[in-house]
Length: 165
Image 1 (tube, one colour):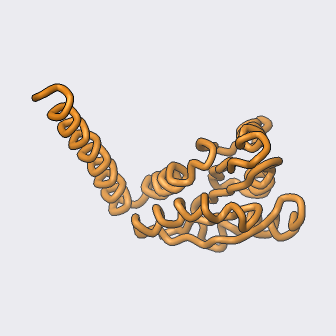
Image 2 (cartoon, rainbow, N blue to C red; image 1 turned 30 degrees about the vertical axis):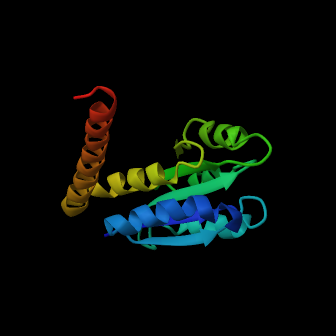
Image 3 (tube, rainbow, N blue to C red; image 1 turned 180 degrees about the vertical axis):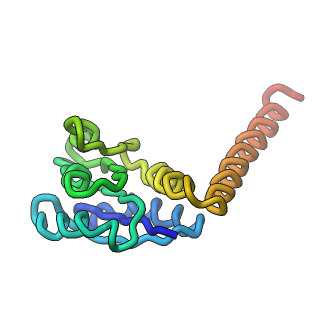
């Protein structure tokens, strides 16, 4: 199975990124995590992206806050799918990161999830790998079924309490 690369602009993004790591681990998808800054370590970020395919990656998740150029810098140097996680900051609640991540020029796509949306980033990365991995697709189907069952259980409980059913 291909692995998922996860890069974050700062180790302060780890509490967000940890949710992606945990989700991938739960699904049995291998991942490798690094701290690379688009601005402070541009050579290392570029090198990681340039060699990601040959190093066994199937997709890359890039998390950054504030200026949030990391996903775009990674995407500029690979044709692997890149999924950006804009991280919330204390200044603009992550709107700046969202706009920096989602507003990519034509020809350099970055799939972008919600602000701090690490779980969805991991699920999207797993779905990309599952295109060619039937076992992973089954795990994703089971995870969806669990989510459905949890919502229906909450509906039943709430209906009994409020609707007297």
